[in-house]
Length: 383
Image (tube, rainbow, N blue to C red; front, side, top):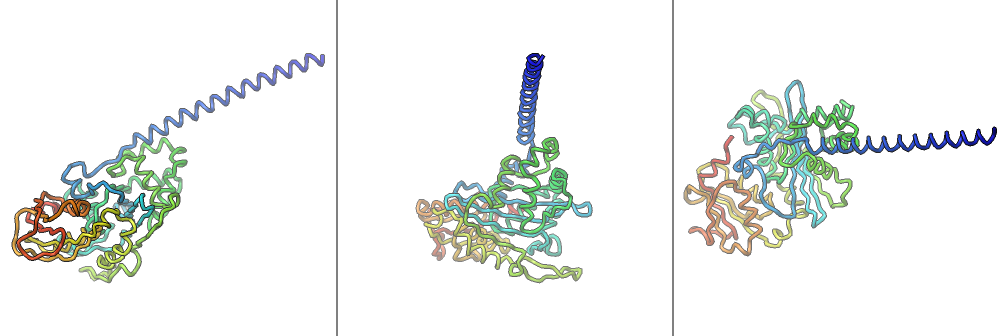
């Protein structure tokens, strides 16, 4: 009897072991199939590029390939049934220098220079709404373009997280009270869209399809958002927080409401003090001097373009009116080979066709590169 009992126990143990192995293999198979399902959902979530046309892309984004990568991230929320921008982040990184710069712009700040079209300065939060008001369906494109004007440089990549996208992310995280505003708003968003949350909510990933505007795929966008947190790479980081009172000046709307307006000159000054940390070394070594002249008959464009060239890393030593109005923009470079990198920066800032002249204009100049803006730059102000 004892022997039979032992044999039964052995048979029972062997049966339990086999059942356990089968259960383990089924579990592993389930995890493998779920991983395939998760990866499929991640790779098939589509982002929408608002600048699919060549002309729009040239106007909005940098075409230069260099060590400095610039990513623009916009977070939008729905407030009172209307979408508004709550935070803008410009992330500049130079991998060869192991250096990065993060610029934060809150949605509540007003931007001057738009009074002619809207009667008042308008807040960053309303950029998309303003764009749709001017041209239906162009709201996101207009918002990105205005951010270029405000920051004074073009980005290589953009990630516009619409209010519909932030709503889905809140649902995935299970926390409707997450605050996406403030300089740490991007960290909160990235945590809410963490890889383990996406894995556990793979089915809901499909709800993000078409709700994120970007010129890069969704999975690349998610990796880019990780970089903004700056907690993995040991890069030297500089931060410009434009909610700081030193970047703000008092203003007043026609209604009498007091507002805070971005002081672009103060911002430009701070940007200039930290930009060298992320600039391409070739551009630094050229030490170029640029002059910008307005021959377009439009007011204020020499300063506007000069500012963009400066904020892109070149030294603009003069900007003023040209002696004559010209039809097409001209760029004079006596020695293109010596200023090859700087020339690529200047040409990238100008979003219209121009003629390159290897020489100097017929009036007195001292710059290494001289830009005369022609009447054809009017096409860039398409809104």
